[in-house]
Length: 224
Image 1 (cartoon, rainbow, N blue to C red):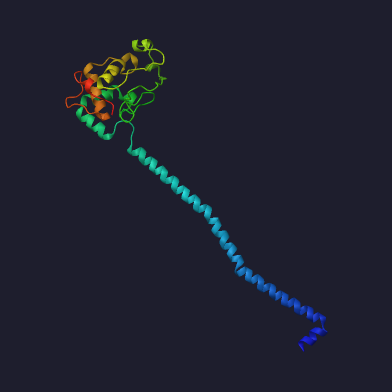
Image 2: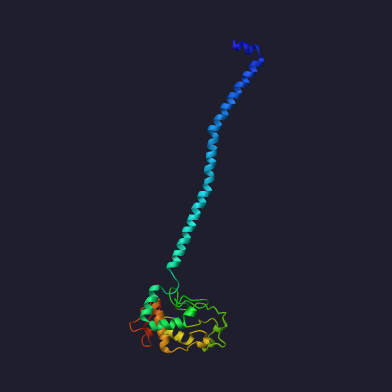
């Protein structure tokens, strides 16, 4: 009977087809909303989190490097080590006082070197052959006239002889130090020897129990 009515009534047949299509479309959209749409949203959310995760990992890595660098700097001071300074102040107390008075203002309390003054204690200090000099901009440290050593030096020649023994070091500092240059060579020999004793002990050189002096300086190797 229903079939007969649909065949006899074209409008009813068209309406029935439209209803079926609407139901199918609703079912299809519901299916997409429940599955496809949810999956797309889930995938998009996951992708949006990936850049944040990468940035967080990079920030942590950079932070770890910075902490490591600061830690390395904090345990590796320039110049003499704490142990070297402590030993030198006990074994060469007069030299420690003279060093603080005559040398530390330019070379630092640890002998690490300040401004244009080179390091004279610790890693890299007292090299056998001199490095290139840097002229000071302070007029007080500029000589009004060249010293005899400078006047006789051929351009390009080293500014000093090689440092191999304690005697080499004494021969240099007793003529060229302390600065300014008008004060060079003005200390007493025993003051220079006291300073050298302090420097070498703090530097880690094996110094005799009775210290460095004119009688044994040539036998004491200062290159570690």
